[in-house]
Figure 1 (cartoon, rainbow, N blue to C red):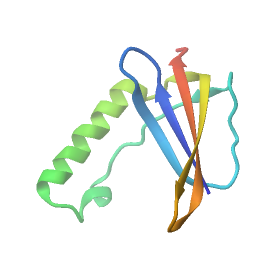
Figure 2: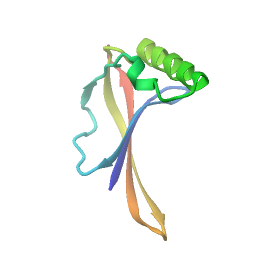
Figure 3: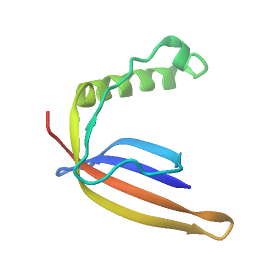
Length: 101
């Protein structure tokens, strides 16, 4: 399986999103990706304790400030193979992006 990770490039790289168990890679360097952050609803966090609920809400608000309705361009790609004796190898593809709007 494959995991795809998106990072915002800069002095301090920041993870934008991670996709697990991908079966194909739809991205390439130069692609423009439209980002959006979906609002959290109470049903999304109802099963968690109060402290974790508050953290989820604050984390989602921070993501909205950074990425809601923004565009990024993939500027760099890195590939890794994670190997572990007890499991099948896993391909990790990292995309480093820059804001374009």
